[in-house]
Image 1 (tube, rainbow, N blue to C red):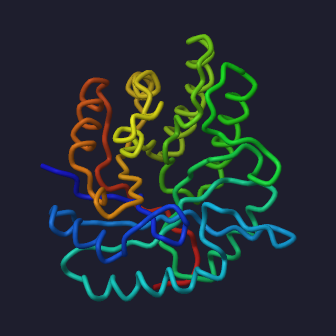
Image 2 (image 1 turned 90 degrees about the vertical axis):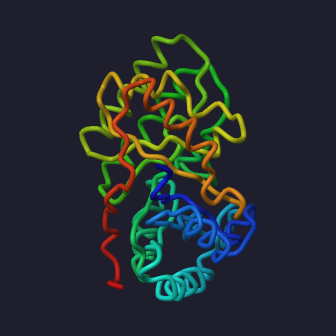
Length: 262
């Protein structure tokens, strides 16, 4: 059986994706998927007119939501369309972010921690480094994000590519995995990492998930309609899950953002 649910797809509004929402949905329908979630890079209410180059702008929210609500109605009974965001946990701006996205009927958030502190003042989380402090800071911030209780899953949780001693890798990533397990939040095996041959998904990270008994999910992280489903990478992910005895949640329950009702 193939993939039945994906909660991690992007749109052109993030400035580094291509294809229409309809193209993604049509491919998902053709593959027999039951649930398809768009989680574009979330808008953030940054101060002083700062705009990020890799996420939608706040003024694009209405178009994003209205487009997907219309498609949800059109495809009702064929496939379940869910509307979400991939968002970082930026403590300095998070309350304002939640207030902003709660003005719209958003179904869920996934945590994708691309920067430490925030992108205006901090460091990119996906760097290769042997600095323990860097890894510890990344893990700390992800754990804080999990603790907010508003995220459905953690996208590419092993984004930080720590290349120092294995014992340090295990020590800090174990903290992240245990926090996710305690919160009952799945950790994503990211298919973009597989198809682009990135440092993630990292085998040692998911071996730890198996040892600890943390739940995982699988996300396409699709930025092009051609990989809206990505069955070849999905098969590799499932082989990894079998190898490490992982408990795969094929369709995670959405954690409500507690905004407007659809």
